Image (cartoon, rainbow, N blue to C red):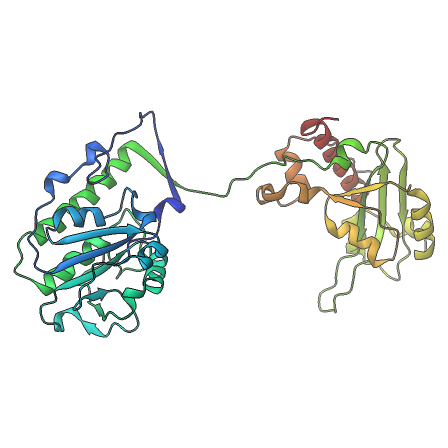
Length: 393
């Protein structure tokens, strides 16, 4: 019966001021939690063959080894799919496979005494691939049974409430096939006590936490930032916001600002607009009078091209800023996007302002500047921070 999904992939344990623990290599539990003395010796008549995926072999919460220790008529074979498929497994002619296949229409309770029961031990995915890849299993009849109660293996994760650990499934199957066999109930009680002790031990000795994707700051800053001292140009472009209920079109720049970091040379211009709402003007911290000196698109393209040098590299916070140049067919030098440099660390922030707070970069906010100028100052500060904090010039 497939075991539970790998607990260690999603949860990890942190021991608090505890030395490396010694284990019992029979039940593979820490010595304080060893329950080998409680495992009964059971003279089962039905031969049990457990095929265990090698990934489960040393899992501390695996129960197949407990079954092997308890049942006198039991064999445990460990291996990868290929190895299990290429060896001559001791599968008897009258064997049945205990596996929740779609073809498993026969209830164990409807069977006459069965000589051998084959059980797969692994995660649900591992069990599925073993059944698929081992030729000797393909012709076996699949048996099923309906658990009388949900599985109790609470220290490993189940895909559903009806799923059982390998131990629970084996005991339930044998109780159905040979209900008079002594010791099966005792083995189940020992298992429940082990689970209870493990949960109590976690509460007093360890903290369990959800493993999260590690958020790493940038390790490799682009060389263009570290070494291209004369060609870095920070830029920011403000575009009119879309209007509700109207078809979205490619945004065009309204206010475009830039600064060459090596010389402090600045570029700043507004572009002529057919119409712009008061709400948009307020958002951009502009006034209608500011557009009295706005440039046409052709003039913007000419002046922007004149400002740029052959080996310039544009530095922007968001790629959408760079796209504004494409939408207006203006010159597009090579570009570095600050947001992308931070990779997975992007999950820790949602805006340039939040990123600067995390990185402890302070920029004086002037109410006299437009929103585009303020965003440009922030992009410049972040670029200088990257050069100073993460790179060697």
